Image: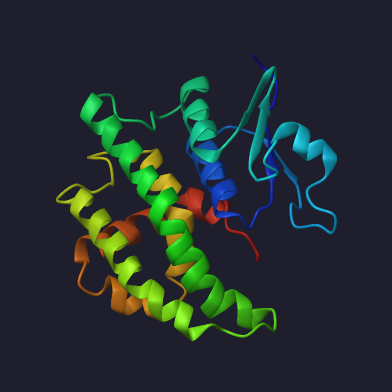
Length: 213
């Protein structure tokens, strides 16, 4: 299969960036086609044909059509040559899936929407900050970060000794949260997670996929 993959979504999206990180780590050439799912009138009809829920990202590679970032990331790892981005052992793969689940089920809403959007994005767009929402999110955020630190343990990466999709899925969300003043206090008691963040943010793929937004 020689077709160049096409990734549909917005560069600012943490989930689009997670897929872009996987593509960058595998050194896969691709085209990013911007889609505004928040446009007046809702997602464009052609995008709803790709993603029935009207979310991003969606992905095409020849006859392969996918949506949901975690599924696309696994396809990218398995369909293209380059360094493996999934552990080879069952326990390692399970840890990877567990971290991705934590990010999607608990981290994203609490850390990105309830903290980053309220503290950084809303003021930047002239909207007020809901301090009560931030305050309510902080205990949940601390729980998320402790769980990730416990999963990290003595390993350098979230699913074990080597970089995996777990790290690439988590990194874009961390990149937003670490811009907030709340991040310093949340991360202070978690030196191993601080060290992980220093490792992942230094990777060339993080610079290559940085959005201007």
